[in-house]
Image (cartoon, rainbow, N blue to C red; front, side, top):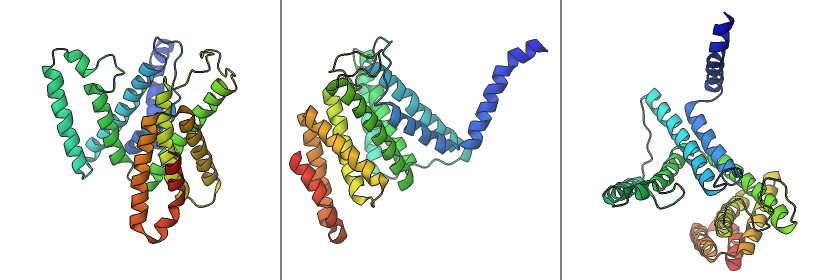
Length: 277
């Protein structure tokens, strides 16, 4: 009896945990949870004891979490017998692009490099498939303003923590974690250009969110993130990041101007950021 208890207790414990998770979350909620975890962890994820502490570890975590989210979404579709797809021509063109790229990779003389490469190249078939999967899951799962706002909040919190770490590492020269390099140029993204692009993304998102929020602690938090992202983008000063930020700000300003009326009162802050860019 003791033998069977010792042998089967781990399996029973696993089933118990699965049952608890099933009671707490539905399949779509588990998919959303995987995306939330990815948004929070990926900017901060570093495993210093591995051969590639930054690039490969981040991409492997991204593959795991996004594919897990896709599995939960697919399981929900099988369970309900209904597949909800976004009605957008962009997905048709994206599928056609992936199919043509897959044929090209299959016919390539170095097919293994075209399909996966070393694992961290952004132009391989597996990477493009991952980007397309994230695009699809975002369109399917972020169907409500609440889920989209929650994802934005989680991403901002992750960015704020990354910048606080960078402040101690590069400016104050205080090593927060002994297993990280003491070099002040070390950052959680591998290159400063990547950090600049990420700061530009956060800057755009925070500009849009900050203007539309009422006075609250959340508005203070979003304003702090906006200031941090602007200072970070200026410190990195990556030209491509500035050009992309300026382009999308022009699109936003054109949209606000075309709406007229109340929308034009949100014109000032994006215009000032555009002048800085």
